[in-house]
Length: 149
Image (cartoon, rainbow, N blue to C red; front, side, top):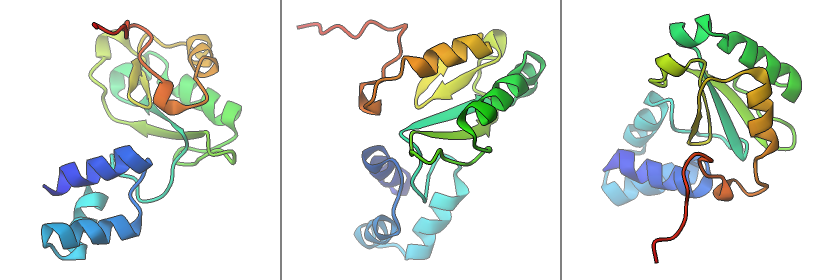
């Protein structure tokens, strides 16, 4: 139950505040240290605020061979941040991660939960330029989100 609780909090707030860790521990009748250990073990949990858009560039061997380093270096320069940092306006956080499972369409990156494949610097800039102001409005552009009503 710890993982789903942490996921729900992070999905709601974008990160997991210390008070939320304590409240999860109390609710699940666990020691706060157990919840903190779980939250720090998994890379997907954030214990400090991140940008509205989390850019995660794959650094697997396939992506690296196909140019992921160029993408990361471009983003570092364009956003004026290093890996693991957030822009001063709190819009972007940049990280690298291991395999996204898109080796056949490398290089790949996630922008929030949307996968972008066969990336070039130009395609990445285009994707960033098309981001809505509210990250909750950001959807995979390859999927048609029409209502079935």
